[in-house]
Image (cartoon, rainbow, N blue to C red; front, side, top):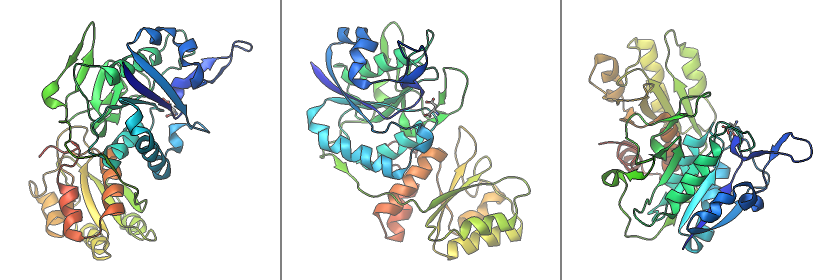
Amino acid sequence: MKNILVIYTGGTIGMVKDENTGALRCFDMKKIYEILPVLKELNCNIETYQFNPIIDSSDMNAKVWLKLSQYIKAVYDLYDGFVILHGTDTMSYTASALSFLLENLAKPVIITGSQLPLGMIRNDGRDNIISSIELAANTDVLIPEVCIFFDDKLYRGNRTTKINAEYFEAFYSGNMPSLAKVGINISYKEHLILPKPEKELKVYENLCEDVAILKIHPSIQISHIDCVANIPNLKGLILETYGSGNAPTNSEFLSAIKRTIEKGITVYNVTQCKAGKVQMGHYAASYALREMGVLSGKDITTEAALAKMMFVLGNFSDKTEIRNLLENNLRGEITL
Ligand code: ASP
């Protein structure tokens, strides 16, 4: 029997109906078998751990990611897999951050949540929890990755983006197909799942919070760029550019980016598109960025880029190493 730890951080999924008042309130994880008795039929032991306080995922941040990864490190040997219940709003950021913090992960870490609370008659939380636990405990295919399970699909977590605030199909992974699909049976795409690492788990202890995102848009003002670049202590700037990495070509814009780089800030180019990649130099509109030393995020998502910059700038200091780490694949987040 596999041992699975379910960690409840908060979010919509954990709201249940109060028996006395009928109002929705937060779920007590210790009562997971009372709320979902069907879990007893899964062939695994389930233990639970509840955040105190539980948080709406809008309050998620680097400090909580570090706590979560350190907690997983502390109990890693006791369990075969981990399921994290989390709000959907920042789920892709958390999945990305954990993927970088947990190097040489050899066990499944599956994050899930729901659009409707467990306490509603019609809800997606029930299936999401059951399938996530089943996937984490499965004995056929090892999934040594940080994943998101949502609406019947298992995704590589650092490839996802929340794209829908209404329907159950809330997540999208434009540059990486799902790793498994749950229907009558579970169909795994084994060739896409990361291999089991040979080395021991290494959990990093730092994330740099001095990172910002600047979305390029028509008529972007130079004062806006300068204002972001002048954030005290800023170390990394993610430029969310158009299409394959394009940005305005006027000299005022380019000078503002150059000034940013000259301050020692690492500038990382990611696309605003939900699929496809940055190819700097493909158009004249990105050639100048490459020439001045902007790094390419290739097909990384903005969520993974933020987590990756926090991770790389928090744990490495050599400029060449930082460049290599950011432009290359570390945890399946970039297709080379
Ligand atoms: N605001 C909630 C959260 O992200 C939404 C959700 O759980 O879906 O925590």
